[in-house]
Length: 460
Image 1 (tube, rainbow, N blue to C red):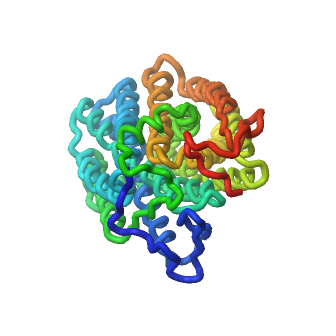
Image 2 (cartoon, rainbow, N blue to C red; image 1 turned 180 degrees about the horizontal axis):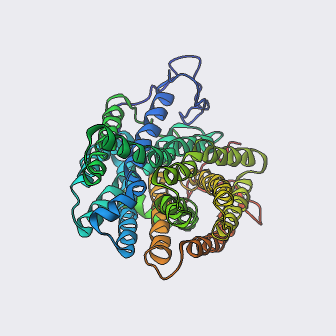
Image 3 (cartoon, rainbow, N blue to C red; image 1 turned 45 degrees about the horizontal axis):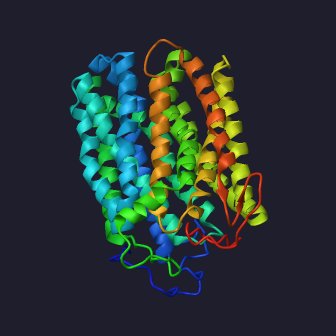
């Protein structure tokens, strides 16, 4: 199975500003430079499209206090809706990996964005708790574009800079979950004041903006994005089936462990995005706009925190190989778990804000470090491994939401601390990851060649 894209990159660099490695991937990653090359233009379209999907998906939580009053939602129904939004992403993320292998990330990303944009708009039609839960489930499908985003960057950038490229793309995109926490309460208040409409109308009209934004970026991706060139060194036989590619990924235990780790870094991040505005609103008595601003600080830290994780992964990889990437992942995610425990224990508003900001930096950096390892697991089943890891994030969010935030038997501060303990424990399996060509945390490599797994050669 070999994907034949419709909008390929040129096999040679269009100018001297772009350099390609032996696999046809660019070794230049300059996210702040002008997007003159097809690679960088596609990079910017990819993260912007994912940004719009995060913006749309998390446009609901900051308005939960007013939606709760209008639809008469109970604490259990709010928790079920939060879990439903993550559950919707699980199946879609698992499917997105093989779909990217088949049709390419450009078509996969743009099409899914256009399909789910009307669902975002349909949030304004919710009138019962049941319809609200169903809509949140369907809305969750849109962030499966995360898998195509990471597949795209992993296919475009060489091993020497892939960790940074993956982390910057996802980090900037994840800012959408923070920006929406800030803008949606302001948009809601603006609609009420300008059009003199009641609250029940204002929150419904607020969802027009995220729906249009997501649809627009989907169109831009389809119109101006480029599919990556298939790897020149990729050993894929002409008769290789989709089934063999999928099974190759599912049989790799490292993909399952990375999915677990991602479930307790990015999954915890998504859960926090879902509950943090309500947490500050209920516990410290701040108003809706202030709670949204505080919550925005958590998500917007992705601008630098997740990219920092990718840069650390690449730096450790150049110095110590894949072993350095694994050690950095364990340290950073464990520190994030300790900060999460502390967040639930502090009792003042300002100390909670400070700890939350520190926690956001480490938990988001851990996500960047995780996807600094993903591209080295299997070149043949890259889409499947990316999908497994990405799905692990949403499964982790569902688990933490259901176990800790779906009822009123525990206070939110206790639930937050327990979530931190789960992070620390579930990070330990990283010690079991081993690469014959690169080694593991506690042992070195045993082979210079691994033809069965088709690992990337660590060009570091």
